[in-house]
Image (cartoon, rainbow, N blue to C red; front, side, top):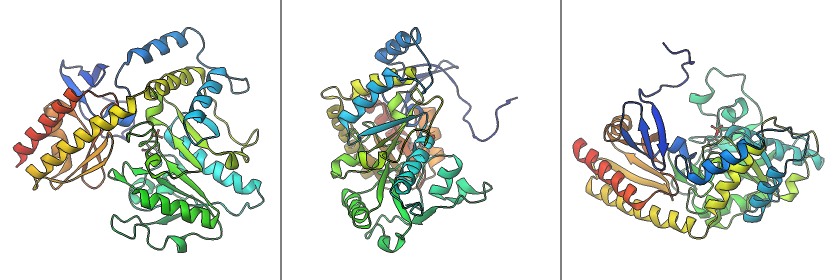
Length: 393
Ligand SMILES: *Cc1c(COP(=O)(O)O)cnc(C)c1O
């Protein structure tokens, strides 16, 4: 019997080890892993450079308190600042911590400029996801996540996102005198792999400027090269004020962070936020190695090249099996196959054929290969997807 709490419905499969795009199960099978810990293992399993970095750092220093200066953290923050919009970075350990800390940064900014009542956060009502901690669940506000966890955390307002235009009907009306920020995922991940169109992001930025409120773009899932750009918002040229990141930045090691511009950072004075584990030397060195690899020349170019090949071929399959595949969604290597047929059966069949994928809302099969996936591995996955489509036809 299992002594683990039953908050997960787990599949009856376990793995001994992983290498690159593959996982090797305890019952001796080899799986093509296109889940990668849900966009976490951005460089696949056991990347030699990460193994080396971990080994080297594990002999030096794992953890010291943030009461002291941590050079490894200084270095990573500098690396991130040089490559992104961010002026300042605050390290955490997970996505939910990063989104909650982003809310703290936004509120504290308005407090620091003498507007303490300006503290409400406007989020997307249906299909948004910002983590499972108590404020984060009420930020997305879905019944499924919040049921039984009341009292409701106050301070969040909600707006619908539509796939058709206008995408945010009545947005201006939803922004009240006390609204501090709009917080949205650049690409809705759990909600069904739905990118906010560039025009939509630009519109959000415009309204935020007009109303003098902050734009928080949650890139926990879609960031760190996943979309083909380092951040998914980059192609829109929109500049957010605050960006929580996590998942892919650690390459499999738990780390989160809040990226912010100078303006909002001014509220975060000593003592306003902290994290015992956040910014530990071990995670800093590992994430620094991930950063170096992703920023190597041609790395993101390859993500774009491979992903556009993948999307193209998946759309071919959609045309071949129009009664099974409704839509191919997403950007870069954050891909959703929206099905007409039941998603769990499809995922199970893919797994029986040694391809691992994971669900998302709206009957979507989510595909998250490592960013350094090889074309031959994409072809292997396509072959399995095609086979399953034929079987279900
Ligand atoms: C996964 C995710 C989170 C939460 O991250 P955890 O590390 O599970 O706390 C927050 N926002 C988005 C967009 C995510 O995909």
